[in-house]
Length: 101
Image 1 (cartoon, helix red, strand yellow):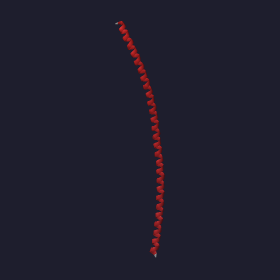
Image 2 (cartoon, rainbow, N blue to C red):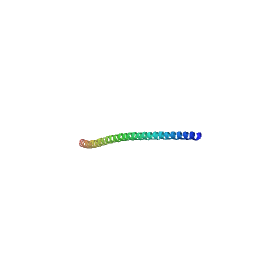
Image 3 (tube, rainbow, N blue to C red):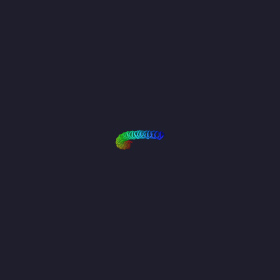
Image 4 (spheres, rainbow, N blue to C red):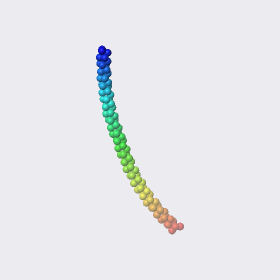
């Protein structure tokens, strides 16, 4: 009879402890979920910042490349003009040399 009472009390205490343990495990799990979500949001924000910086740098690089292309086109045009002037000058020089020699 005493053994049954002691067994009942010990069993009840074990069930109570298991309930507390389950409650603690649930709270820890909830905290981990919250922390995991927080970390995930922070990582998403950092990834977005990096992506925005990359986009900005890419746009800046594209603009600079366009400006360089425009300058290169202008240089090519000026070079063509200079070659035309040189060809005309050379032609005039040849004509002058033919007339005087």
